[in-house]
Image 1 (cartoon, one colour):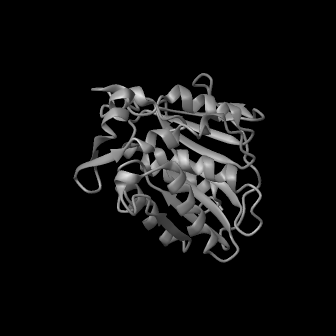
Image 2: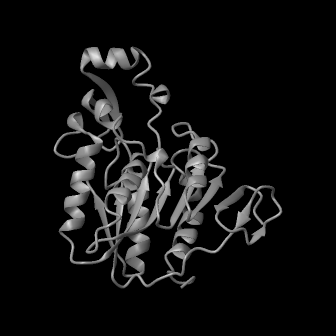
Image 3: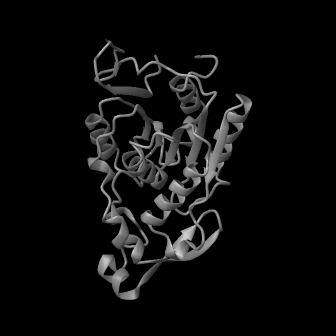
Length: 255
């Protein structure tokens, strides 16, 4: 057993792995991905060309699974809001033929994935059947935002915008205060979803509080949380994450 990784599962306890509070339990029956579309939601100030998006795109392509990566920056990063991202995702999913949808959400994409699953729980044509969350920002902890700290929320409100370094564009970009106002309408940390969730969280995450993610996972009826010795980007854990994701989705060699 790798002592660097702990797997927390929150349903019926099947066995303990000897590390401590780590327990394992079986998920709901696995299913075929023949009629499933996987949609990847990138993180804040990222893009569909991110290294994690490319990593998953390559792996799913090897298995012949349809994989889409939503572009959440358009039409302009400055006017980004959670509502706009949800509307864009809804439109992208609605344009698909009838199919189950698996959402993979990274950081802010995890925030959006949780809210999308809650909104679309009753959609018979495109049910969101499973979620994979990577260091999900289940709460937007403004005190962790270095861009907000100089003037605080009041300074952001008065100026109307803050400067954010956009990693995909490799340059600073303005972000309007509307992002904050709109985001405060959503509370994914309090959501209780009825679909299976697979969650990966780094213990050394500098952007997301691991305790908040663990609390969120405990509220779910079908959640498996993997705590990893990694940072917010989870770059050192991608192979492990893929192996567990393949198992979760019943892909070979786990199908």
